[in-house]
Image 1 (tube, rainbow, N blue to C red):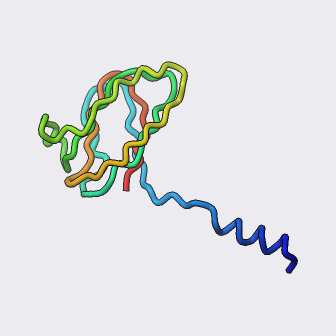
Image 2 (image 1 turned 90 degrees about the vertical axis):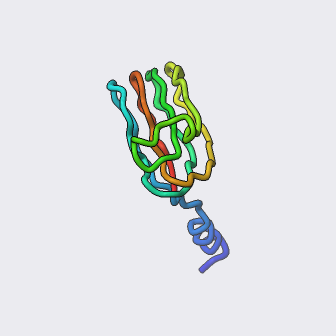
Length: 111
């Protein structure tokens, strides 16, 4: 094995690996979506283009936990035609619930 082949082999196995799970939150009807029903972390949110609406995230394991004391943050999605990635990196104690309104299309990455 030559030096170049060794470098290529080493570089191949040094690639980053994403261990996150993901859930797509989309649709035109308002309502809650349970992203995760356990403790973990909310890593980031990817917003697709040409969608508008709001999504509110709660630290709760069920849709019944969408009250102000469990609020993590709110997104007003008006990105137009520009896809957007939002790094969150928030620790979650109970779970992740997304309450959506309007035409939303988000991918939530969590662990």
